[in-house]
Image (cartoon, rainbow, N blue to C red; front, side, top):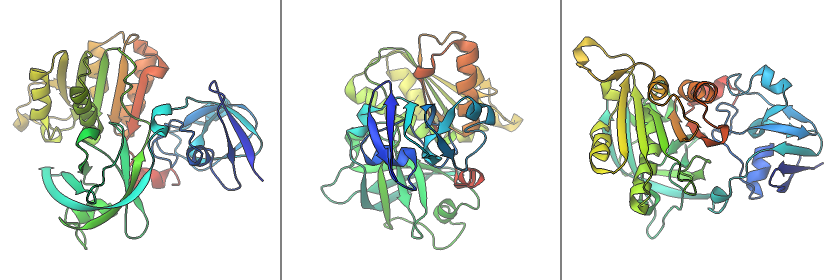
Length: 348
């Protein structure tokens, strides 16, 4: 049995087949709704069910609370319809214009940018380029079929090689191999498979609102892609970048961000450290990175925010920017960097 889904306010329609998640069916038919992890961990695909019934699959309580379920919210990435549906969700037109592809790639270089961060460059097949929007991600397909998601850290115009920023998660199947903590080791010239682009986190070029860019850890990667894309396209909007880490070494491309602040008109950079030690000699901003934004921008009602990093940072920023700083819900764009452990906790 199949069910029809109507998306409001766009009026777009698609069909969900047996044992198919709502989001999966939408993407298959070219209806791109907001999404991130696709495993019930990040909450990016949260939408309201206006009519009809769904069965909600396993998910993280942080992504969808019991109270939100009572109010008719659902995570479309892990929800099955039990009848025809009418849902309220934004249709992301731009992402739907780009085909998702599977292709091999070769590890061109691995550079350790910090003790726990590697910058990987992947060489695509000859005469091949991956079309994507600045901020989107790809999935690396491991030999056992498991997947790991990483954002492209370079602008699309320079995509003959893909740049990924990978943080070591001890015990992680892929990152242990990359950092030499398990065998076989991932090394230069290895052939990998990938699929992409994916995600609905990208620069909205039709807006002229001033922007706040918020990154924690390797959440800097898609932010870097967005900034480089703006420079390439000549997009000039007031931009303030906040990059947070526990220790100064976590800001592994700090000099690059400082260079942007010196060279780009209307660009400001604010590094924030939460757990600096005396030996770090840190004299800059301290505390939670999203709180630094709130100190500087108590009124965000006229801004656009792009936030990337750990789920706790994204969730806190989303809630407090809206409730305390007046940021419109539609102007908060986010990509929560969920790990395999996060997905396991969500039942993914």
